Image 1 (cartoon, helix red, strand yellow):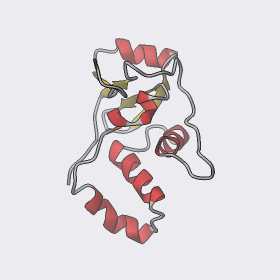
Image 2: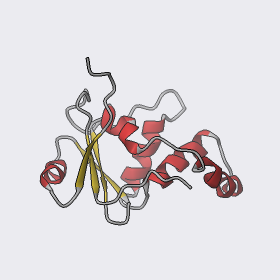
Image 3: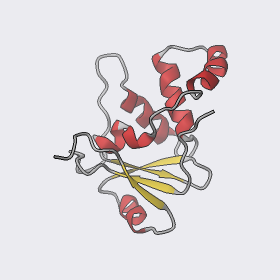
Amino acid sequence: MKTTNYYNTFIEVAEDCPATKGEVPAVKAENKTVASIQYELLMNKPYEYTSDDILFAVYASKNNMTEQEKQVEREKFFSKSQACLRASALPKRYGWGIHFNSEGKIGLYGFNSDEYKKFLEDDSVKHLKAMRSSRVK
């Protein structure tokens, strides 16, 4: 099974992120976006989920899976490589830094927050940038 989990890592906001602070992702009509589902899960229960948990929860939500289906489908889902949270709109578009603790559990921190700044200066965690939205010219 392939994994997207990170440990003791901080994903910084993308270099081309238009947000100047952590913004709540918009919900389009009655359908939640991938970013809005990720945001809701991570803000409601900080440090409860791993990256794999979040990615699969979004997939299950978008596909209206039952609890029984989830048990079977999770293994299939991770039998193929999945994009990690560096590709998420949260750090690319909405200004959220993503911290993974030693257990791989996730917390979100707004770009202009004191906590975000502390993680930037913390050499005890690995630092990665979120993927850029546009190509470098």
